[in-house]
Image (cartoon, rainbow, N blue to C red; front, side, top):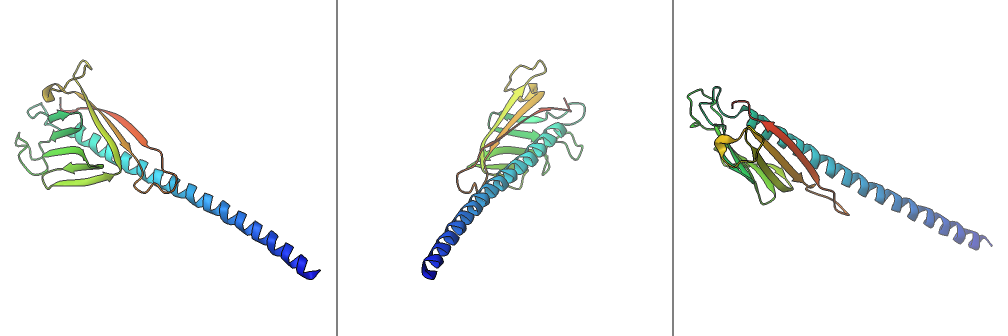
Length: 173
């Protein structure tokens, strides 16, 4: 009789332990997905804020230097007169933002440095003073940046995409 009770107790203990391990595994996967998504969102926000700040500061007061040198849907080249000589000729005065092989890169003269990994899409839309779409760099007054990222390490079950958009008005225009 004791052997039967022992086997039943071991069976119930095994069932409870396997259920507990299953619940813990699901919890761990959910935590990993959430942490990966939060990291993806945070890095995307930081990159978007940095791009927006550089766009707002681009150009030179009085309009002597055009803020944008290249206005393409997947790339923007920003000019900033940091030394006050009226030209964007020094290091760091011309900055290129573009997407390359899933990595958002910033090139300020020292090579294209990685800013954010796991970028699915980067889109720039340009608008003139009358809010009409334009591709002429000299006519640009507003830039809308759309950045779509995914977690670098999505974990089990994949992860949702993060889609962030911001509108930037150029100050030195």
